[in-house]
Image (cartoon, rainbow, N blue to C red; front, side):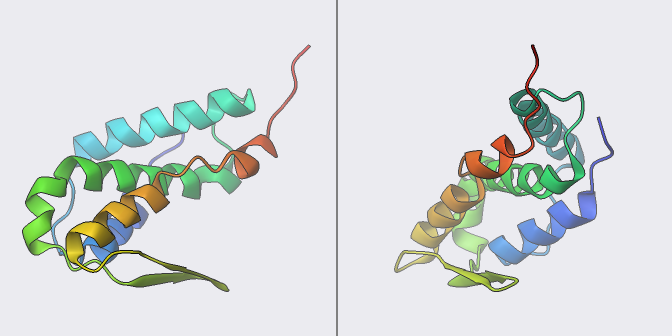
Length: 123
């Protein structure tokens, strides 16, 4: 497995939650490895392609937030929208809890179209 980019994951986690706390490194590593293995299996490769690492990182953040959601409800300051390049995503919900749930759903979405483009067919 490739090395995990903890800074990317922690920065995105802090941006989405509006907190300064870093997620547990061991849990982060476990979730990232699991997500990377899932993507590698879906593409029939031994390692996750570099162009799909952002998906594993985003799914890791989503799972970290899902696991810490109970404690984040009181402290999270989830933004109403996120812009990545020329794409803007607006989180639905009238309060922090609903926006946090919306953020988790956005981060952990399947993204099959991107993953399948890197699939290697084995005969």
